Length: 250
Ligand SMILES: Nc1ncnc2c1ncn2[C@@H]1O[C@H](COP(=O)(O)OP(=O)(O)OP(=O)(O)O)[C@@H](O)[C@H]1O
Ligand SMILES: Nc1ccn([C@@H]2O[C@H](COP(=O)(O)O)[C@@H](O)[C@H]2O)c(=O)n1
Image (tube, rainbow, N blue to C red; front, side, top):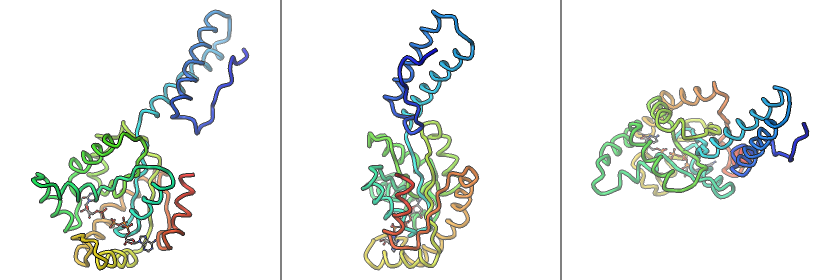
């Protein structure tokens, strides 16, 4: 049977609501025509597949698109995220920034706990971080997010998967690879330039690196096994790093 109308089947359109509804309606109208004609089972399956693709596309369109951004303290995650935002219109949510904001709220029930974790370079329980992230996502009214500095340990990963796993489409994990010495110097310079961060000092940095090596690297390895990690050499200048980054979003 001849196709009644040209359909869009390009993979990049999957998730696009117009494409989704168009394919569902075309599939349904073809099934309707088929039911009035004698035709093979194979052709029927083809049209059913088309409908299923449309439904799948609809489900994808209703999910948040996520890129996790990971790397050591000072690797340049925030710097690159702001360039991605400018060029590709994502919403940047930094888990660390959200925790610092929560800590600063007068009367926050978690303020003290968050400050203790930040100073010690340890990781705040996922229930707190995940709910801050989900609230920020909902409040933005947008669908495409860079989630910077998350998931940082097994507890982050499990809590996120439980609460958000079904609501998101994880596109990839952007990993800024940078040696400890370079990262340390960047954070110390940031502190000296007046970042005001209670953890841009040598004592906190040692603890943050410990957490990074022992708790965050296994998470990156976990995503590597799923072929989701896009590793970038973050030792170069911000513009040079971005040349590689933008290729992943184009
Ligand atoms: N490619 C780069 N070369 C040199 N300096 C950089 C580069 N990228 C960022 N910086 C500087 O290093 C410091 C840390 O950068 P940034 O805040 O982007 O890192 P981060 O990975 O988000 O850090 P953190 O995890 O501690 O929040 C900043 O002062 C920033 O200006
Ligand atoms: N998922 C996270 C992210 C951050 N933290 C705490 O915030 C500190 C600063 O994080 P940056 O990403 O801004 O460097 C970090 O050392 C943690 O104490 C967290 O608990 N969970």
